[in-house]
Length: 170
Image (cartoon, rainbow, N blue to C red; front, side):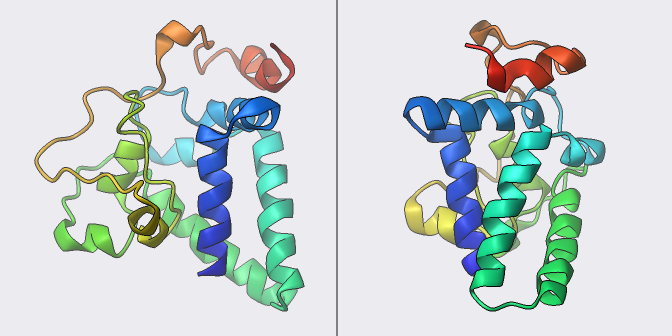
């Protein structure tokens, strides 16, 4: 639960944070949202700084809270397996299970190009999205378009060096 809460706020701030820090976090997280479809390989598509910041923030906090390095490692493996499965390019209708676990159906909303749908910041459980009002689930409607708002001038996901330079550009 502590991991989920920390990850939820880090992820949410990476999308909605204000000021210089919020803009920086979005730019290091943006690489993951540039593709216009959700598929399993994109689970590993992220800026190296995003991975580093997340790892230091989340894993060090869990260690400080008293979890052993082995427990943190095991938890991260299980969490990565689950988050990888939430990126499967399959149309799984999970029904009430969407209120228990984040799966493909919920995570697809997170990748919506529509900023009002691009919520669901939880990693494994939707609990904190439900608590903080960022839960989006429409059983009868999938997001119309995935990715980001192209009018913002972001580079296509295939332009590797431009995507890597995003956190360092104005």
